[in-house]
Image (cartoon, rainbow, N blue to C red):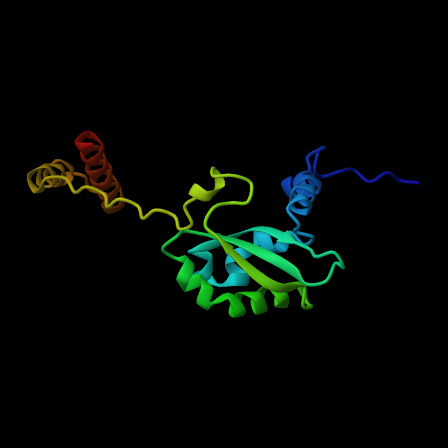
Length: 168
């Protein structure tokens, strides 16, 4: 019997190492299918995912008719309230059956205030400062004698980046 040589050299994929821990953490919050957490933007849609995120799924005594608790900010709660039916339908489509019968909106997390302060949308990046036109002209003049076009363009970009970094 020939033993196959491993090509991974003892390394494992991160997903396979963390899969059990992610599953246990999700189940402690009621998420039997962690896909709702990991693919929230795809399931809820970009418009809802930008203003809300799931925090808990609570099952009733009979195990039927779960309640999805969604965290949002105070200003976005009325907008989300109008979209509860659409959100429930999308989550149920992800589960493949009518697992969620009710959507509850909260403005603070059920486990405390620390999670209630989360930012939903990533902050917009600050615009990059532009160097002074005189400095750009000086950089252009300094690289003009270079014969190779690609090298000249790279040196000019480098000069602009140095000017921007020193401006900060």
